[in-house]
Amino acid sequence: MIDVVYFAWVRERIGLPQEQIETKAKTVMDLVNELRAKEPRYDAAFADISALRVAVDQELADFDAPLAGAREIAFFPPMTGG
Image 1 (cartoon, helix red, strand yellow):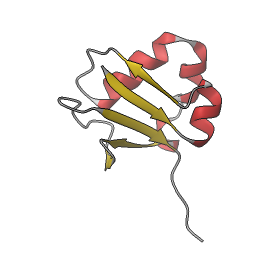
Image 2 (image 1 turned 90 degrees about the vertical axis):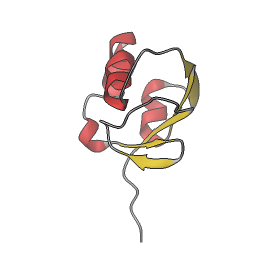
Image 3 (image 1 turned 30 degrees about the vertical axis):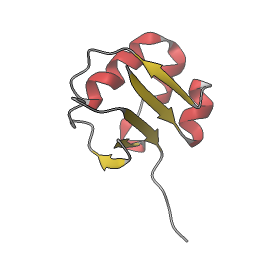
C-alpha cells in the first residue's frame, strides 16, 4: 500500500485529499497510468502531467522516479512565489 496525496486543483478534480492505493507500479508514471485508467476524474486530473509536480516521500521527484520502498506520493501544481 502506498499513500497518495493530492493538492490544489488535483484534489478538486479527483474529489479526495488522499487515499491508499494497492499498486504494482514500478515508477511514478506507472502509478499515474494506473490511476488514469481507474475513473474519468483521475484521467482528467492527470491529462497534462507537464502541469504537475510530484514528490516521493516528501522529496521532489521526476515522473520516472522508482516507487520501490516509497510510502507516500504527492501530486500538486507547480508552486509560484511572490
